[in-house]
Image (cartoon, rainbow, N blue to C red; front, side, top):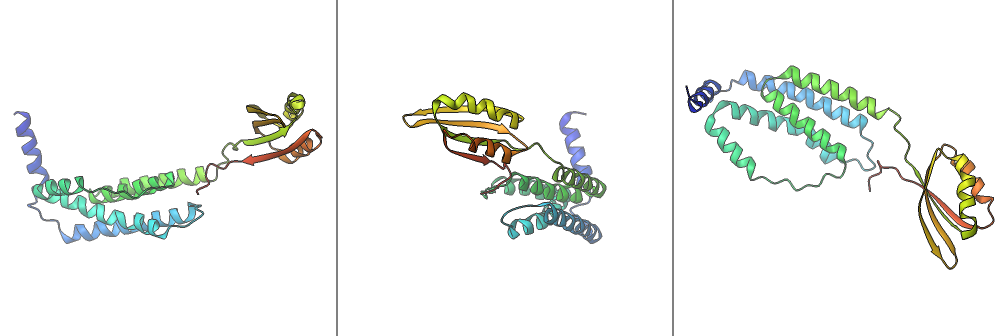
Length: 224
């Protein structure tokens, strides 16, 4: 038996139901999809800390599994429908930009629910959803390493090294990123990690030769 005969035999086995999908299977699939979609809906609502809540996206990830699961049922029913669906999906282009990387996770989760339920692998969809929820909750409430502060100092060139030396005890890690020399003095950019930023600022205020300084903390989770 050559490869072509094996492929034809496999196709006949897969599409042996002559394109008939019972209503019992459809209702069963859609009921499980509804429960898992609502579960994802609640997880997104509880764990999402977005500055601007996007109701359209929230609705989208809840409805997507219904379409995906029914498409999978169609693909299992008839070879012609399968080829036609593949061709139709190949020309679709989604150009909506996803600004938050975590949104990609929820989109993939919704697609996963649809595919697994469409293939009637309900256990796989349920177990995966539960495990993903546990991981998301754990990461959400885990204290990740703090982001560094950026300190910008405008001072006289003669005290630059003294400033770095005196503020080092107030930091865990310090690194001078750049020195910009001007006629009026020196602009120095320093990256540092500190748990006591208030004491650091008081120390900087004690230098009479420092004209002004700025402390900036960047939060990588901020979305503009």
